[in-house]
Length: 379
Ligand code: MG
Image (cartoon, rainbow, N blue to C red; front, top):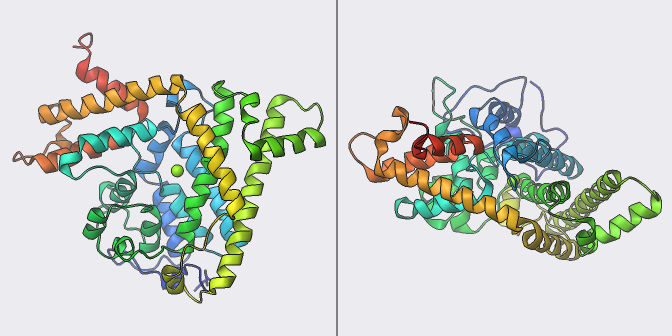
């Protein structure tokens, strides 16, 4: 029997001490429980759909922009680096990073906001909860159960946020939101790896799209400081390399800060096990000064990129597509593929099925489906 946990800190999530799966299964032998989770995620249908779902830009706007798939891979890379530095479980952070966005709707956050409004009377829509729903119920791959039957620890990492009303429905997985306790350090870490990934890749995509300029970027202290360092070290470097060098230094600065501050907090709290971690305050954090810098960067990106008028136009169109699809399906459920039609006229169940159908759509599928339903040219 391979010891998958030998190199881990005592407060890491140990595969051999996992709280297990909802349906018990024999051990995989050659893989740790969390490696097995990761493999199931990579082979899932929802994972492949991430390639055609967007964060900020629409999937067809350019071939080089991040999609949810490349974003998830970047999160996994950063999370693994951090986990190794802190002697946490790399397999678990990888599984969580690759699955954290599985429940995202088409068109980024606007899709989820509109779907949440549409679902107001039927229990709402939260993308974290939807990611969990995908891995617990919606994937159809196994003979013995619905979903992917992942371990408690991976599912805990996926469920970053949750309303109290929903937490009450989730049993042991929702308990931490009611008790106000923390998830594993691996879950805390993946959450911040997500933030490091998008804060940096959105700068790259923003500049590539022409919606941001280098001159504007100088307003961000952290960027300006590291950019100056790059220019000093490599005078006359072509623009793209100068940018990549700067982003590289930013990711390094953020990960180094996170490791240093987290090491300090872990040492102070001295957790002896994952149970100690759960009752301690959050132990994976940026230092106060790095937190201030990342907050300033986020504010900048919000004002100058996420609310750029060209992005707004996309957002308004996307929200119309999602809302109109939802309304059309609610009014005439017979328009839905047979698998999504609920017999017996239960409106709540029908609404949830429609939310599952829409949330599963890629950007281009949603655009096409909207045309199929509404275009009178395609009768
Ligand atoms: Mg993400």
